[in-house]
Amino acid sequence: MVLSLRRRGPGYEENCPVDHSGQGPAGHIDANRPVHVVVLGAAGTGKTTIGRGLADLLGLPFGEGDDFHSEANRAKMGAGQPLTDEDRWPWLASLRDWMSEQEAVGRSSVVACSALRADYRDVLREADGDVFFVHLVLPEDVNLERLVARQGHFMKPVMLGSQRAALEALGEDEEGIEAINVGDPIQVVEDLATVLIERFGARLSA
Image 1 (spheres, rainbow, N blue to C red):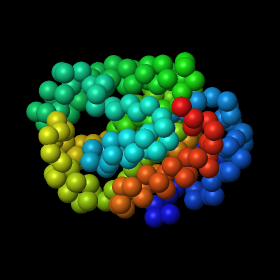
Image 2: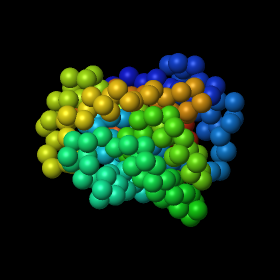
Image 3: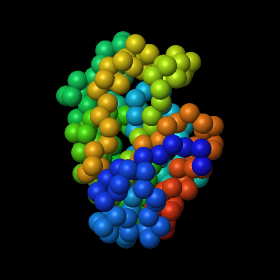
Image 4: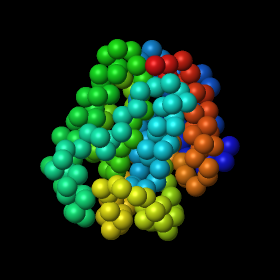
């Protein structure tokens, strides 16, 4: 495995081994519920590439967070204006509702969403089913380089500073992992899929 991982959440000790039982630390996750894997991070960290790759490899539906933004939100970001909380709450709620729709038909899912702050992630955690976060991390210079190289996206590189400033690391009550995403994307996806399968097993079935 080429990823540098830190596991977060109730019952995990930093850098502890993955639990192979499928039950997780302290058995606090229902082994029969679908799991929503939320790939999060600042713009340019590879959320869509890694999230879509995971969804394809695991055979799960994929929710691209950018697709849930209103036209007004897109216009603001395209003009280099950061979104306000009032802009974000309806967007996060629509993502949460999509996740619940997948759970209603017995499906797990993968979602790509910036989810910068804990209170934003709390909205996603309201979805029916269980939520597991994959926080993609990059050194700031690499992050900016990737963002500048990206073509045709409404998110402007000038907004990266505000995103990184707002970003909050996963808390002790948020189950997930932090992954430094500097390797080959295919290998990163395979490594993360291995972690997820070891953690959740058949619960990741679509």
